[in-house]
Image 1: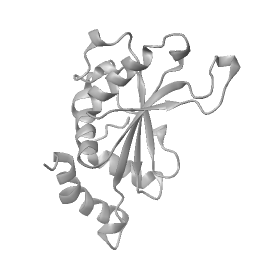
Image 2: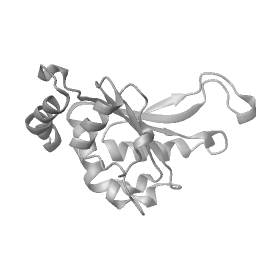
Image 3: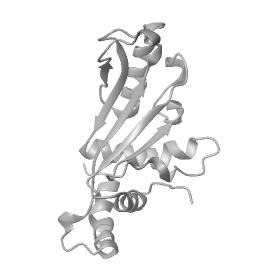
Image 4: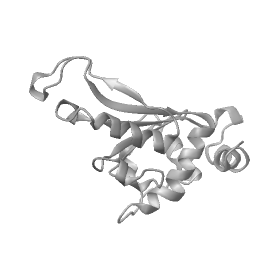
Length: 180
């Protein structure tokens, strides 16, 4: 089943971006490749069960099992040993990606307290955008009683755009509420 945003991308956004940037082919139009959700858990050295709560949160939000990331080297100041689990990540592609983006824009972001839009400074110069969400509980799928505490996460939008201007145009046409 094709999502609402992927249909909108094909029918409305591609022709709009062709006119806006003067592309000669619709294959030049930037598209959303993937969305990566990342949640770092530095407290696994103290609380071993923290990783289970983070995994539950990401699995509930995305609908797929998160990958546990492990430390590459030991850092004694942070009490981290090599191979210690320190975070979780989920990579979304295809229809799950569009479905997540639709829920993020229409359900989760409006539930954020004092929300005035997402910052424009999260672009990396290569057409990718990263934003932080301070609370996982803005997603209605996450039940607060099944978490030990409120945690945040990073959401990275990887696009095929050549520069930040094209990526910003793509994301704003998809409905991303940037600050004025």
